[in-house]
Image (cartoon, rainbow, N blue to C red; front, side, top):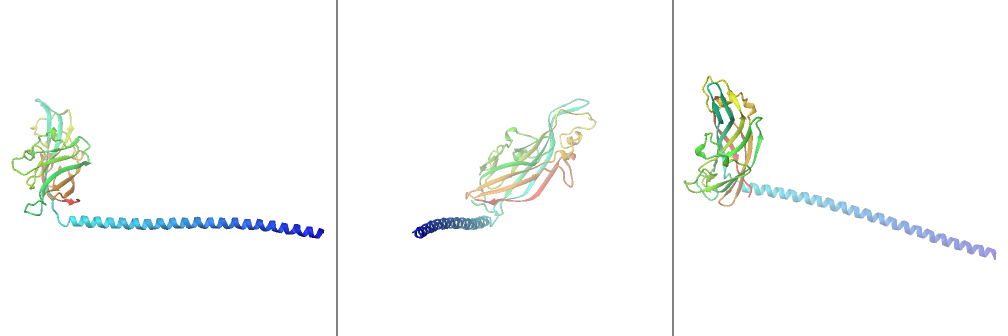
Length: 293
């Protein structure tokens, strides 16, 4: 009887151990499945990201190729360009006073007038190579003088090479031009003929180079030009300046063009310097308008 009971107890113990082992195996099996599931999800995410990056790179490449082709098709020929710029650099003074022994100036300023001639390769005028609207924007002084205050003004072509400065013509940010189709247009305001007959005329002015400055050497005549810079001991290196701006054109087909202009203010050439009185320069350029719309 005792043997039987002992046997039964053993059987029951084995059953319990078997149940425990089965539970442990089941739990281990679930954990493995969970890890495999996580790995599968991670692999799926990685594959998705790689596919997305490859597709995105392909889209960027195609967009770039399309934009290049679009730009190329719009610019198969040059419609507008600026082939040369005429410069005139000089000096003058404001609020001067003189006596037998000295000469005092309140504002010595240096100015450079510039005429930018927009032209077209086609001699016959059409909707394509005539102007509907023009404006200047993004004016920046890329190199500023160490003395004085630089500004840019619009100028009537009839006042080119004159020292007249009209405060109302100061360009603060953007300059919009009126577009005229008759010869009686008022050029005192920013105006261009739609057939490219007149240039864009601007005046760079560096004012207050010298203020309350007295010239005591009056043995030689005072002339109101670039020789004043020398009399006032102004080094040319202190008034060197460069500027840039963008010109936007819309033609009569509503096509839109842009050209970025970069200018170094001329104070001397191979033949003359502003110390001699003035500098006149006609400079060949290669500014081309590209069509962007």
